[in-house]
Image (cartoon, rainbow, N blue to C red; front, side):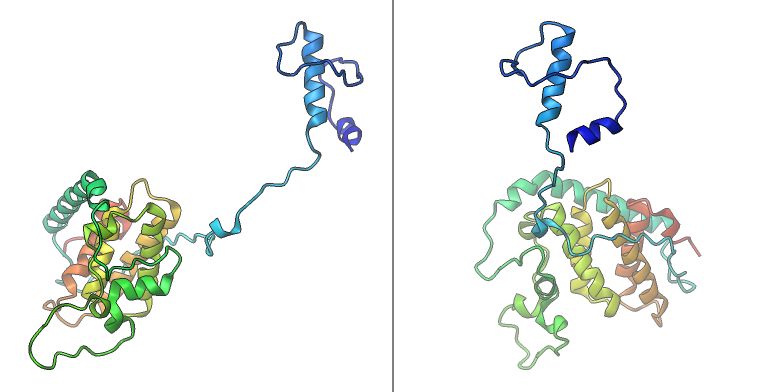
Length: 264
């Protein structure tokens, strides 16, 4: 096999072929040019004809293909888009929050979690949706407010808020994964407060420069937010402000300027 391969490769230097010399030490510097070239020959003869990379399939994501769409956001109905001043203020606030999270990440990640906080594994998509949104939203079950008293929040039912002690534990791979899970849920469902809180927190933890997959995800988020906003009936809808915020952060902070809202 080696001789066949060598015949296909041009010989650049006139080196005589020789038998492998047993006392030729590859760990010592060559004493002359001829010995150097013989060392190269020996090293080449020791290389296998075929090399197969060892890949752990468990480390591969299920979805490897990244499709980056250049489609823009739907235009906001008249009077529904925020002012440039408002957008700049939100970007400034968001930047300060990101800096604070980065500064105190080590402190918060070391804080003990309550016994009822069982964080899902990175690839457990449905468990993350249930964890962030709560069973009431995830299962589309009505809340029970009977009795008029609130004995205490049941985070399993209403969703765990993105406490700093929780999000500070997420590495970038998990941040991107959970962001993808929630955006996928958003594509098929409406906007709820639990979703908005988690999307904001995950965006605050998303490091720049963005990976191609994250770039595609946040654009998907902005487009979906614009679709939901376009179907709002009035400006008093409580979903308007957080939807505008999602579009603003993606466009203005993460430099997706083609998605940005313009003033009416």
